[in-house]
Amino acid sequence: MSQQTRPDQTDSPPRWKLIGPGLVVAATGVGAADLVATLVAGSQYGYALLWCAVLGCLMKIVLVEGAGRWSLATGKTIYEGWSSLGSWTSWYFGPYIVVWGFVYGAAAMAGTGLPLHSLFPVLSVTAWGIVSGLIGLALVWAGRYGVFEKVLGALVLLMFVTMVGAAAVTLPNLGEVVTGLVPMVPDGGLVYVLSLAGGVGGTITLAAYGYWLREKGWITPRHMRVMRIDNAVAYAVTGLFVVATLIVGAELLYSAGIAVSTGDQGLLDLSEVLADRYGTVAGTVFLVGFWAAAMSSLVGVWNGVSLMFADFVGHVRGLDADDPARRAGGTWYRAYVLWLTFPPMVMLFLGKPVWLILAYGVLGAFFMPFLAVTLLWLLNSDRTPREWRNKLHSNAAMVVCALAFLALCVNEVRKAVSGA
Image (cartoon, rainbow, N blue to C red):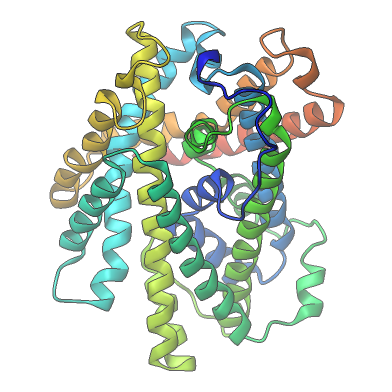
């Protein structure tokens, strides 16, 4: 993000709109797997972990604000910041983004295929997944942010209306909802506490926020206030969505002692419960919301992580920051979109190799601690202009995030190794 691309400082003040980079990053981070984790937590513990879902959204606000502040204050991308900390960041990030993209591509396509197969069984889950991947490729291929943002906005509206609507029809017990905001860890619930606080909306896409700010045209410190509003409102909307998911789990499943499957299959189970309880229309509408949640993550990753990959390769190859090859729609951006789309299709047919899943689990577990620790480093050093460095409250919040994600990292690595 070079200085030459910055608009004149006399431009009119930037305006904030509901649909912006914040809602894009928040919606991309909340996929079907996050919904199932929240749903299962509600089905097992009722409202006891509601506070944890809220805390998780607050943690994402802290980290995404830090990533956005770095980009606006310095005019540099997050990867340029990481590379200034030493070559070790590239040795971690390079293998991670390659392995992550391959495994995530298969998971994302399968996740969109499940609800589409339930709605339209004329094609298999795999076939619908491949169709979704190709649609994602077509939507982001040109790298036009305006079109991408509008598509994400429509998907967010669908997923929000369906999940909040599902929560509303269950007639939640408001007294228990309020009680659930009091921090406590039920017996055997520590893993769910970590998963809810760290997992909901927490992926590599958080670091893509600065790239979406650039594509939006918010690229100077003058955009700092609008960025903070954008980020806070986006995660408030996401928080309501996550709370609605937990309410559905608590009211529909916990009270009736109904268990749902882990993985994306759990959302199909919920659609059947809704259909049995409230009619076929309710189940169908929920499946549409399930698809919207899965598709928003797919399209968001196809665009945002491809921007990160293009910046990474361009930087390693010594290309200028404004070189078209490392920007949206450029050579390396499109190369990663293709990597996300076509090679993972093999996994849809042949299954997932154990060694690859192990690498994915271990490398992925380290990303959120990596992001938290590197942001602490960058935002407390002379790499950031003094005015925009972390204050005491920002440091305290980021330290809490780093410790929480380190604990989650240990748990995820343990699961990945034992599962392999």
